[in-house]
Length: 32
Length: 442
Image (tube, rainbow over all chains, first blue to last red; front, side):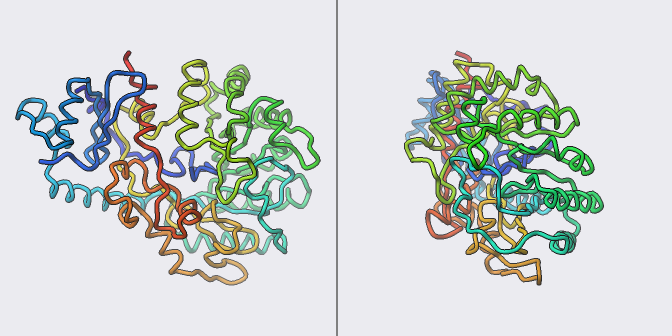
């Protein structure tokens, strides 16, 4: 198997799959 | 040892290879056909030799002890809840539900006209309420609608007050606007700490103007483009949204090229999103015109292959695929994708409080008032607050729960009659596309 995890680069936690993504939380109609 | 119930395993689109992802353990691997056959045997409880491959599966948590996995799950869930306590809260404020546009697919078209108008007293009450109720929390305000940036002098006065009060309270502000009046609002906007301005363009002029037009039918594209130019020139970040269905998706390559040629796509003050036209409460478009969650991304997958420049304008997330490709790690497990009453609340000019933008303005969804008196239906708030993949029964055995997060609570309630029910996202299928888009070495 080929890992896609670059262990040295695992840093701060982040969640982006949320309804209103953290970096663009203004998203509207994003309830999709 | 058993095959983790959080393994997401499938074939990569347009590839002979497979992928396996586990958001609980934070591992993701590309699997060739030979190893895929071994994994299929493990899944179907056939024995496999105790060899290096078996050890690798155990090391990465794809094969695990059930009790140990349950312990890890509980720990990660508590981490998630703790982390959310420190999360920023988005507070939507609706100054009006009226609008200067008559968009062909508006889901607010059936919102009944409400008596009363916004005034300074209501604005004052809003700020008093949020500063008390969310004291100690990081927070920001998003001004929503209707259309908040209407062109009347009175509206400009009210928005001016909102922005000044936000600045005084050290709160950043976002706006969700159709963008038609951005140029004339620029001096007012520049007074605030504006985080971003969300504007919609549904394509280049002919496509956009056929869907998003003024009451009376006149086009709006040119004025909105001037507004976006003005925002970027004034270092106000624009979050450009394209709402898509089968009627306009074909125009995406042209819109992307337009944005690239304008210099928007390379500006640090510009970002994009693609939204799916869908039935939030209802939808004016006929069903044949709409994409499903997966069919939109299947279409985008094909289009970005045929027109790679689209990726300079917009890069589809395909669930966690984009994050994984850009960061070399998986995001934390998502136990809850619905921010309602947790990291999102909505308030409107009638003094009512709601769970989120999906429910704001729907009378039967009010949770209470901040004006003229403060009232909150705590039991209703608790229902929204309790929703996550742990409380939704159907999520319990789902392999993709930690990427899906249970979907949208409002859509679930509309569909099933209860908030704590599913609104499933096609995560496996999205990952098939995403791995094909970002990890395919073929």
